[in-house]
Each structure stands twice: as C-alpha cells, then as structure tokens.
Length: 135
Image (cartoon, rainbow, N blue to C red):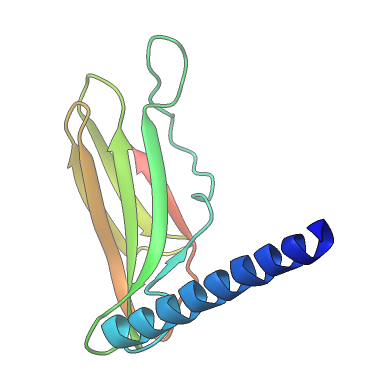
C-alpha cells in the first residue's frame, strides 16, 4: 500500500514539473519571439602593459565584465559592451581597445562609479577580445 502511494505522489510531482516547464517555454516564446540569448558573456581582458590601479589593501580597483549584446530589432547586429566598475575612491581614466588594434574608446570612472563602454557594433560577431589601459 505504501509503495502504491509513493508511486502516485512521484507521478503527481512529475506531472506538475512537466506542466511548469511547458508553461515557461510558452511564456518565453510569447515574450521574446525566440530562445536565442541576447547576451554572450566574454572572457577577461587581455593583459596590457599599463600599471594596475590598486586600493589600500592591494586589490585591483577595476572590476570588468564584457558581453556581446544583440540588438532587439535586428538580432544580427551585435554591440560589444565592456562594463567597468571602479571600486576605489579616486578617479581612474581608462582606454578600452580591441586586442592588437588602435580602435579604442576612452572613459573616465569617478570614485565608485561604473561605465558601460560600447567598443563597437558588428554584424554576427559574438566573440571579441579586448584590453584595458589604465591612465
């Protein structure tokens, strides 16, 4: 009798999980039109020869994340975005460049500030390499 009850409970749990998964897929299809992710996270910045700004405890001041972000209307257009957060109390000037390129964007990060730098926009290019020079 207990085995039969356990089997019924397991079947109910499986059915509920299946219904929830199906509803999530339907909502996703209705809201976004596709299941293709809009962001493709990138690896860390390539090393540069510039000195790294550090806080009083010796930790790097800058926290960096980068992503390739598809446009909403035309998903084949991809923005290369580098997000930099300053965790120190001083202003830091940076130059974000494609690796081995002169194509760069300057930014000034105020104390404890953040800046999202659009390095460039390309068609269909979801992977990019970049470096950051601190001034």
